[in-house]
Length: 362
Image: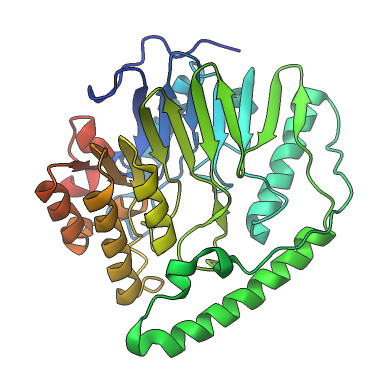
């Protein structure tokens, strides 16, 4: 393995043994939430990927490509200093699908591509691990036999969300959950019928599935959640796995793409985990056709709950999807106000780095 990130400095002084660096985020001009974390035992880069901003982002295509290129350069440079690479899901702003050098001499903890995954991400994963096998193993990927498993209704494990009263919206929500369950059951049929992509180990790389697993390296614990919805219940975008990094009494949580904690049970989990630092993506307010006022209100309430009740929390990075339109702060005003009232630092990645969010300058 390569070096452990010596020379990379934390952007906050409240942690004594964990060093972190916010490598690239949407507030810097390109889609990403890449984060470097170093403990006395190991170092890791979470979600090394970057993508250009969407057409509605108020900048020229040339500028968007330049910011993407700058982000890619920064991410690839920091990957050289890490022992571990984490891929929480297979969206292009969270991993590099073609640049295999990023993963050389690394231990890779990745979202299990065989289950709790939508069709497009499964196809991307199949291609990605095929490329890994060719480059590092000089062989074609050898999928294993299909494995039939029982997958319960995901709502069974989300009692707070399942029993939430939405008033007049209840009938519509019930219908949406029924449609979502039907979609989920169709995905299950596919998971149970496909040949399974195996974990891989070659001379210069090792791939392990992350979902629901814990890894200990010295006194450092790296915990991954079971698959969580990428957004609201039965989001067609798929699932992600969040990561908890602990050393001694210090804890950082990278929530991945929850889209701002729509689901009450996820907010409750974050409160109980009680981290020192939380990296949370805000709601995608720029996607107006997908974000109802009801779910935005719900998201804000859940985020404020975390700020009010996670007693050790000192810093929340609020970024990623949220920083894709100019009115992001106005639409999530209550979150920022709650942080101020609780004397918690709630900032974008750019602000934590001493910069102005790029969207605020356009």
